[in-house]
Length: 303
Image 1 (cartoon, rainbow, N blue to C red):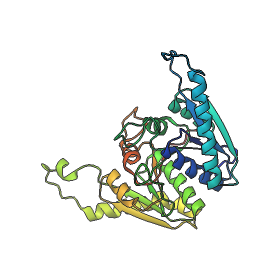
Image 2: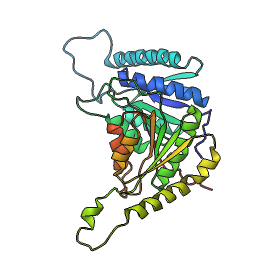
Image 3: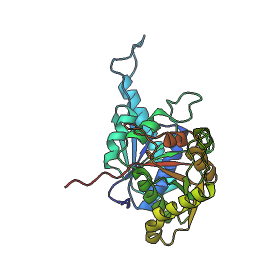
Image 4: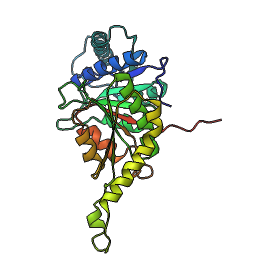
């Protein structure tokens, strides 16, 4: 079960960028909702060889980077305290690549949060490589904080939206989404799309008549069955169930317009073996206008 664990922190990546500042603010408020500590982490990447400088510097390259990192963390601490004055904060500076450090530390976190693009982002790149890497390999749920543009704050109003397809990742996402909606006191919109291939093209040569009305009714029934147990567990959450004849990405993006959070599994039923992050999850990371939570399937308990 995805129950909040107060002893496990909400971890957020810090790099001094406006995107990271939005992530820190979002993470601080989420930590306050969970009654969890907030952990701010900045990773300094030092090149394997000492950089060439034509004149002696008053301090080493390593010292300069670590000093800058501490400044980033101090600024993030101020942002977090303004957003959630009572949250407990821990600041960490690590040496290494950001994605590698965040993936490693996600094993001891309840949730990892980061901005969609950091200072290392390339012009025109909609989402940073660190965000994609963490969403694919993180050991806990990952939230990539987005707004309508790279410079705007994420929305704080509206429902939580979750994609449902019956896969293990989807089941974990539904659990996460119900808890998120309950903690915020907002409605949950469960979205199931059932036409993610062009049926007309696939069956163009076959003399088959597809009963779209019957298919829609069947898909609605299946969606209701998948949500019945969670609806009983969270009776106070207002639930909307939308079954849409559309491709998953387009259907979810349309439904998430005006939402404050969209939740998906890391891989759906259409995922390829060996692919850690599905095409739907990746597309939402690039194009959503609100924060995206990517939730991996629960690991089976070992005896």
